[in-house]
Image (cartoon, rainbow, N blue to C red):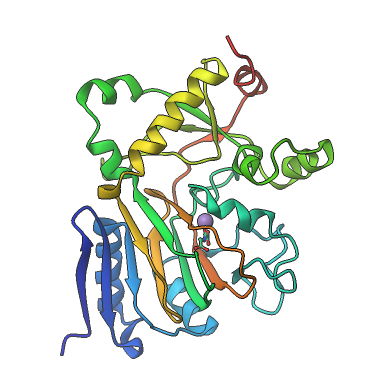
Length: 296
Ligand code: OGA
Ligand code: MN
């Protein structure tokens, strides 16, 4: 029997990986997983039941691990580099950022360091209802735009902030909270269309996208909202209904993701992250940040 087989989940996104856990970190298996991740965007390992140690070993084989949420509670010292995604305050004392996962996002976009290349999540406990995770392929979303749209969007730059990412969580944040966001993350300017080293292009989108450089706020936000709706159409999206023990890895550079809302504090996912070599953006200028709060 082959050590690994991979089938498509949907024509434009997703793959299901069948692999013997004993061979998960073999060099030839890792090479096939890396190739499939590039082609399929998100890969599911059904009921793999990886321990933290096994998930970290796989993470390290896929690339250099990074913990970009070190400053956020939930990355506790007992399992360094494994971040708990849960609403259980005993495991994660500040679930604000976990509630932010209910909205389309890319991990680590508002941090002034290379964008995390891939995220790995494994399901430890599920919620009674909700809790499926959706992944939207932003390469496909770009590819299927019309030529006129591709020309219109080619050179646009977008302002991304934590404040925007958690606006649907908190509404208007207090000054104290805004101060915390400033210490935690940067307001970043990113290209709307990201041309990768291999020449492929993807849209860089999410709830953290708060305006377009040089445009009044509403104009930029309207374009971004329309593009998020475009990218979230069913053909570009793989939705994963979890079973305990499932492990999923996705290309964080080219997919955005969100979870179907849940209230159940029992849901616990363990997350590890692979550092990327690419930094498509840079901190936004004060002037460009201010412009997206003007209305004309
Ligand atoms: C994440 C995330 C979604 C989920 O771990 O970065 O967005 O399903 N998780 O919990
Ligand atoms: Mn996320």
